[in-house]
Each structure stands twice: as C-alpha cells, then as structure tokens.
Amino acid sequence: MRNTWSIFKRELGSYFSHPIAYAIIIVFILISLGLTFSFGQFMRSGDASLDGPFFFWHPWIYMLLAPAVGMRMWSDEQRSGTIELLGTFPLSPWAAILGKFLAAATVWLIAVGLTFPVWITANILGDPDNLTIFSGYLGSYLVCLTFLAITMLVSAFTRDQVVCLIVAVSICVFMVLCSYDDVIRELSNVAADWIVEPIVSIGVWDHFRSLMRGSFRVLDFVWFVSLISACLLGTSAILSAKRA
Amino acid sequence: MIKVTNLTKQFGHKKAVNDLSFTVKKGEVLGFLGPNGAGKSTTMRVVTGFLPPTSGEVRICGLSMVDQPEEAKKKIGYLPESAPLYDGMSVRGFLRFCADMRGLSGSAKAEAVDRAIETCFLQTVYRQAIDTLSKGYRHRTCLAQALLHDPEVLVLDEPTDGLDPNQKHEVRNLIKRLGKDKVILFSTHILEEVEAACTRAVIVDQGCIVADGTPDELKAQSGSDSLYDLFRKVTTTDTAPAKASADA
Ligand SMILES: Nc1ncnc2c1ncn2[C@@H]1O[C@H](COP(=O)(O)OP(=O)(O)O)[C@@H](O)[C@H]1O
Ligand SMILES: [Mg+2]
Image (cartoon, rainbow over all chains, first blue to last red; front, side, top):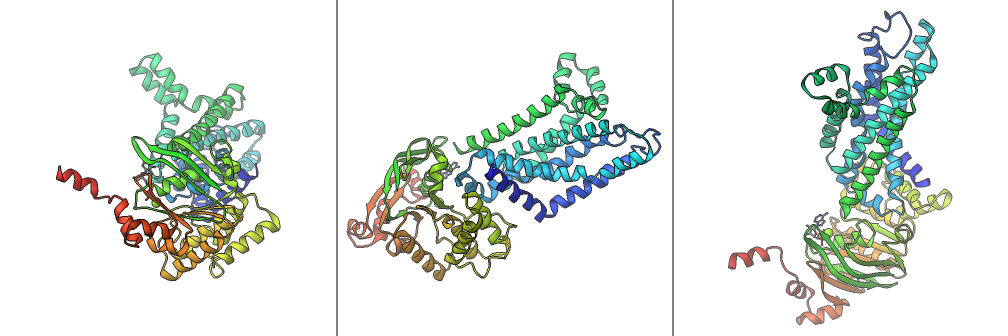
C-alpha cells in the first residue's frame, strides 16, 4: 500500500514535469468543448441534456488521446532499464502496476473534471437531470480507464513508445468503431449475424450509451471493471513472462 | 552472505549461466571477471531477484530469493549495468523515491539521503535534474541509490564502467572501504581492478566458472605471474567460434 502510494506520487510528478500532461489536458478540454458547442449544437438543441452534444464525443477523443498518456507506462521503464530498479526493490509487482495505473487515471480525472463549465452551462440554460449527467461522466471516465488499461497492457510488450502508441490507438479505434451504429449497419449487410455479434460485443458503445443516457446497469459496470482487471492481470503476466 | 548453488539461466535455447555455484561471505569482496557476454550481468540479475533462475538456488543471508523475494531483496543494494535512472527527476528527488521504496521515512529517510549524497560526492549536483548530469555523476547517483538503506549485501555490475581514472580510483576505494563489513559482489572486465579492490575473484566464461581464487592464487595459476595471461588462457574470445568454423 505504501509502495503503491510512492510509485503513484513519482509517476504523477513525472507526468506534470513533462509537457505531456498539460498538453493532453488542454487539448482534451478544447476539443470536447469545441465539439459540444459546434457540431454538438449544444446551444440550439433546446433541452439541456448533455448526452448527445457532449458525452457522445468522448470515446472518439479518448481513442486517440488516452494511449498518448499511457504509452510511457512500461515502454519507457524497459527502454531506460529502470525496470531493473523496480524489479529489485522489495515490492510486489502489483504495487508498481497499480501505482502507475492510478497516476495515469488521475491525469485523466483532472482532464475530465476540468470540463465542468459544460455542466454549469447546462444548469444555467435549462433544468437538466444532474444524476444523468453524473452517470454520463462516470461512463465517460470508465471508457477512458478501459483505454488506459489497454495501453498499459500494450506498453508491457514493447520498449518503444511509438509502437505502443500506434498499437494501442488501433485497438481503441477498433473498439469504438466496431460497435458504432453506422458501422454495425454496414457490417450486417456483408456478414452473417454470428460474425457481427461477437465483434460488436467487444465495442464500448453498448455499455457507454446506457450510462450516457442515465440508466445504470450492473452489467455495464461489470463489463468495464472486468476488462480493466483483465488488462492489469495481463500486464503482470507479460512482465513476468518476459523475464523467464 | 550470498550463496549461489547450481544456478542455470536459459534464454530460449541459449544458456547464459550454466550450473554456477559460489559463495561470498561477510567481509569478502568477490570480483566477477569475464569477457563480454560471459554471463556476469545475467548472474547478477538472478542474484538480485530481477530474473527468476531456470534452475538452481540463490540465498541471501539465508533467505531464498525464489521463496521469500521481498525479504531477500531488502538485504541487497544493486547497481545495474547501465546505471539506469529516472530522467526528469532531480538527484535528490530520485534518491528520496528510492528511499521510499526501501521503506525509509521521516528523519531516517532524510539522513539516509544525505549520507548517500555525501558518500558518493554528489553535494554539488543534488538539486540538478538527472538528464543534465554527466556520465560520472549519473553513475554515482545510481550507486548512491544502492547504498541508501545500508544493505548487508552489495551487488555492483561494472561499477567503474565509463568513469575517468580519478573517479575509478574513488569508486575502488569506496568498494574496499565498504567491503570491510559487507558482502560485495562486483563485476568488471578490467584486470587491475581485481588487485585493487577484491579479496577474491572468479573468472567466468560462457556461463561457467573457469578460475577461482585470491588475486595472488590466480596469478600463480597463470604460470607467468600475470592475470592478463590467465584471462587470455581460460576465456574464449567472441571471434573464436567464427575462427573454428572457418578452419573446418
Ligand atoms: N534478455 C535476454 N534474452 C536473450 N539473451 C540474453 C538476454 N540477456 C542476456 N542474454 C545473453 O546472455 C549472454 C550473457 O549476457 P550478459 O550476462 O549480459 O554478459 P556479461 O554481463 O558478462 O557481458 C549473452 O550472450 C547475451 O546475449
Ligand atoms: Mg554485463
């Protein structure tokens, strides 16, 4: 527990001693607010709900930006050899994995949290259901954490950040596209149901959409949490398999 | 005490360390000698618990590295081969982080960091960012990290690599001084270092120990009172397999 905290502090410090965290946070806020007030037609939509104009864009932004935050997690450690220090300190591998994951998650918590002006605007313009908005934020953050966990798993495989970024972005893009309505429609025209359904079930939209609209299903929660845990377990397995 | 018994480490089909056994006792400084690729670093990585052994056993002060890794790792200070550091931290920030990892806190942590900075002559750079340090200082920062918790066992992989002659001299003296009441295992391929700092040395070649003894005993073994000749005699050069196949 203490070790997890120390690793967490170091990692978070290193995010904010590089331009990377600031850049990502600013880009995320600009893009998400920009899309909300332009294509999202937030000002004209009449009602003050946020799912369509605001949360709808989040998976599209995360699929590109979340891997940029996570790509250094283990690649850098392996390239510079500092993994040899971590591996010989008296700590369990889980302390390092959790500490790193929580630090990246905190960077994103700040980024997502700083979009609060949208929430304030919605409350000024109309009378939105704040519980639905909270549920939307929760869903959005879970999508982000899922992409971070995937990036962490990919970074355990390679010592090259750029390779990690490209592979992780590809996986995340796939997970966003494969369950998007338009894509499903195209897909069902050319492929049989038994092919389409498993592909769609890998995607995030099914699970994110219900949270975005304010319906909290235990199933979605289980889906996100088990995917994240699987990636963290996988990271631990890959890191120890690499040394064998 | 470090006790290594029948240690083998295999990467795929390649045996980097082959059935190695040795013991280092308190007050001993064991020099690990050998050509590049002999398996020195691999042995040290297994001894420090970074790599699991393919077979064989490592015991640190009686604790098995396989069964009680966290307890055993507490006893060791380790300087990895390339002196890896977290760039972007300051020297002191890095040492504080390492002290945290060693379970030090409060005034014990502050004292340990100050002592390590002093021992490794880092007083002039401790505020500096690590990526702006020269190679000698980088090396000493990593060495400081290994000394923080005043470990019973020190494992140093090429501690003088890349240092200038003055720095080499300082590090050798440091090793000699620390060796009086610690267990030290250090690797090198510089032969003078053996006489300058070791109480005992082994020569490793292709994962096996090919010579073992005090510096004087080793010199006697060579027949010509020179470590250099012994080293040339018992180790294979990395061009040897190519030569052999060309002859065939
Ligand atoms: N992770 C690894 N995967 C495969 N081979 C390795 C790995 N690490 C070391 N080796 C091989 O093991 C042998 C011993 O390497 P090493 O222990 O680094 O030698 P030394 O430190 O004595 O120069 C070398 O032939 C090296 O190529
Ligand atoms: Mg080596």
